[in-house]
Length: 184
Image (cartoon, rainbow, N blue to C red; front, side, top):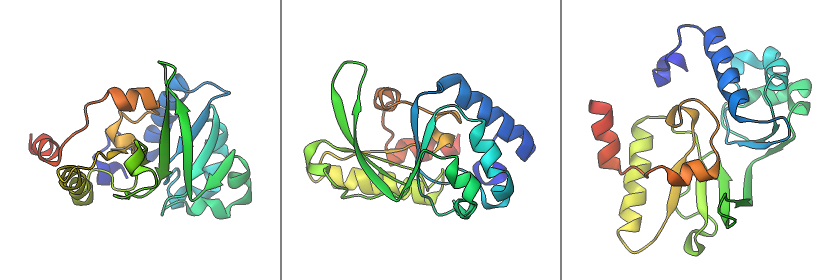
């Protein structure tokens, strides 16, 4: 993943320590944290339980395609929950609530898309697929829809957990803006 995402670390150990530090700087012990898949790479299966236990908060995992560590009973038990998909309401700092659909995968016509629901997903990192998703969303919205879709993969958010308030404050990128950023 270091090479795939162009992550700023030299070793897996260095990356893991920094990711744990960034996580614990933002997450309190009692917080509920949703991880939208691919929490731990398959080669770390034997270390999964001890890694999870070092993270603050109660972690609910929305299963991703690389979450093979879930076959390890101790690791699975260290999580507060495991789901394929979820549909939740999140309280914002201003007192309002927003409905959020949680999926590992991008879904252009997600449940509640016509009723101001937000889709939060991961999976596509910063790949050609990610740019296609942005373009698809733009194309659909240009036809009169109002989709709100955010890729919450850690590589998009300084490798740390983010709140829904932080996500909504960020300016959504267009496919054109994102491709320009990569070229620079």
